[in-house]
Length: 451
Image (cartoon, rainbow, N blue to C red; front, side):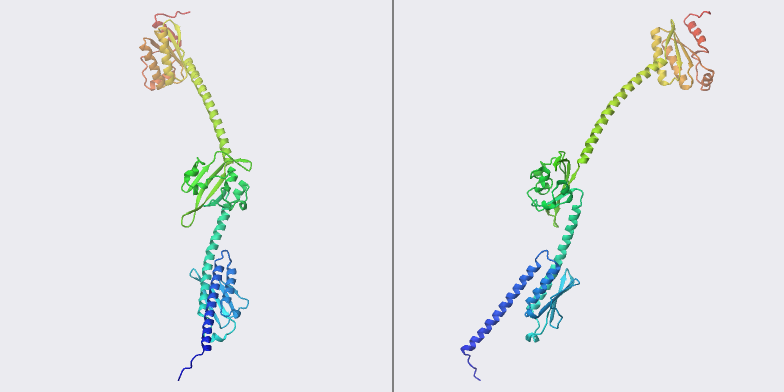
């Protein structure tokens, strides 16, 4: 059968069909790109709530369908349901799962409210299903990012609350020197509110303290250490921390204040320094207390030195008096040519015995004594030690050529000496002082005539 040749009209009809098809495809592509752009704008807008994004997704999905006039949509997310005003479940439906961090959170659904002539073959185009899956996937990523950002915001809020309620004046800057934290304590210290300081740079934070824009301790964290150290000669480093105490008072809000500062770096999750924080403590009361304590210490030192000097003088005088008393308690008296008399009263210990011997020997030499009359009537106890001291006195006197006559040994003392088995036979003894005087005069070739 012979084919019918196409006329000019038929060629024109095929061309129109092809052009119409290309225009439809171009329009579909344009619509797809437009929807993708709107989706990106919607998801990438930081700070938007989940509700706002869900409602935007509903509008975007319905407008992206082949038949937007009869399309409706629903988002079920984390137990919440968002729908278009005309939503109704129908048999012409497709859905995509919302997944975040491996967790199934919900679904995105789109329905047609009525059938269309070409739905017998296919209800939704492949492009429509792909777009819905992209929407569900992007919504899942948005929720995941939203949770992370919400967690960060919550952490920042908690950190801000903690810093705000710190008792020390505290502020923080970023690497550019812009103030990002200015807590309540530093508001009270400087009189400058956070709203007037946060966000400012160019050393604005130094003005309340120094009256000029200059480096502070916090800048030593970000800037080279040696560059700022000259302004803080008393700074010390402990690990990442810098500590400085200024001995010269600051003039802040008309008050002279002594301040102590501590600065440390702020790191990101990679360990990079992204800023610094400084706490400032008002130590004026402590300084005044230290000064008062130092004055009291100096005054006490002066009093102790004065008291020590007085006690030293008193001790010297006491020693001199003690020596005088000791000498007076061991008097050696010349009673006749060649005879000296030593009356002992009280306890004769080793120290006193030494003084007795010293004074007696000096008197023997000075008076050229031949006899020493030693009376022990006033010695309450004669024990081994006292007896030995008496023997030492006799021995020392004999070495200078003087005889010794001892008087006044009581019966109790005699019994004690006998029990102690002390040999006093080498000592001349007499019972009474009178008998001792007679013996002493006899030894020097004289006698006492009766009256």
